[in-house]
Every structure is written in C-alpha cells, then in structure tokens.
Length: 149
View 1 (cartoon, rainbow, N blue to C red):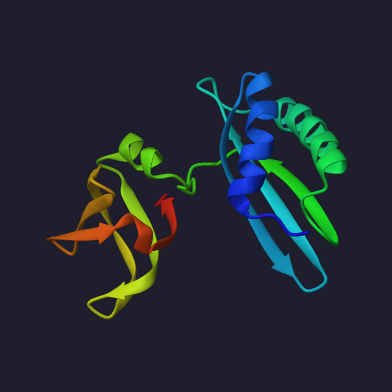
View 2: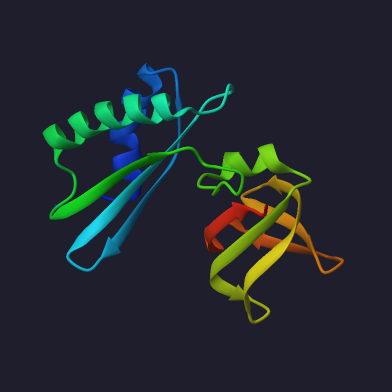
C-alpha cells in the first residue's frame, strides 16, 4: 500500500503533537526501488537534534505498526530550516513580507517558477510582488514553495 502524504500527515500528527512538537510537513520522494520519507517538525523554541531523535523513534514505531508505505524507504526527521518549505495554506500567513520561491503545477502567463515578496495569503490564493508587479496565484496551482534564504 502507498498512502498519500496527507494520509501519512494525519497518521503522524498526534504522535508528533504528543511530544509537544508541530508536524510542519511531510515529503515522500520516490528513488527507484526505495523512497525517502521526510518529516519536518517545528516548535516555538526551535528544534534540536534530540527533538529529531525522539520524534524519529516515535514515528518509526507508528510506521512499523501502520505500514502505510510499500517497499523500502528511509525515514528522515528534520527541522524545516531557514529555507523552510511551505505545505499548508495557513503556513503562508506566517511569512508575509518574506521572499518566497514558488513552483507551480499550472503555468501562469507561461511561467511555472516565481520568486518574490509574499504580500498576502487569503481566499485560497497568495499575492506576491514579482519584478515590481503584483501576481495573484491560486493555492491549488502551487506544487512547491519555500522561504528564500
């Protein structure tokens, strides 16, 4: 069975929150016969290696029991870092005024990649200043996003 990233997030969120941490996001990256499952955790105080180790042990136990992924995979637990990826719409509101990189599923005016200042995130769209102009991007068109560092 191969679960979606959303299903894995829902499965792991209670475990991460029980450690007084926030599940920032989940990535599942296929690599030939194996894959990488990357779990991003965060907290207001920041993340330490000990936090990652504790979360990794707990998450590993849940994944062993629930077995949401078929085949071999490597589990990686990490902080989002300075160039943190953005996974959920509500995360964008925390970074108004910051420079953000976006890669789109669907091009806008022939472009898939945008880098600009995040002006607002509301009504299921983000508004950025890109090259001096405001650009409105529907959230459902965003494939990947991260804070530019």
